[in-house]
Amino acid sequence: MVDSQSIRIEVYHREEDGWKLYTYGPGSTVKLESFDIQFPISTIYRGMRLTGTRKNTRRN
Image 1 (cartoon, rainbow, N blue to C red):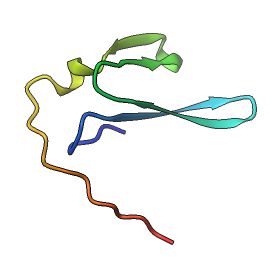
Image 2: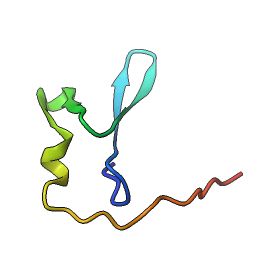
Image 3: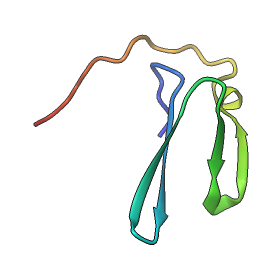
Image 4: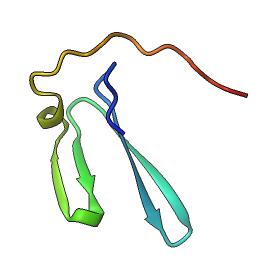
């Protein structure tokens, strides 16, 4: 999932014991193991205007 409010990408990867969440931020290299690719997170956000700050939308 690519965040439009801050530089943040979340990738879920299925492993033997279930799903694992990988979170990438500024300066990170994003890895998509299923596709055997990796790229700097800045590639995705190049030329993109972020929409603002994230509000806490926690649900119980």
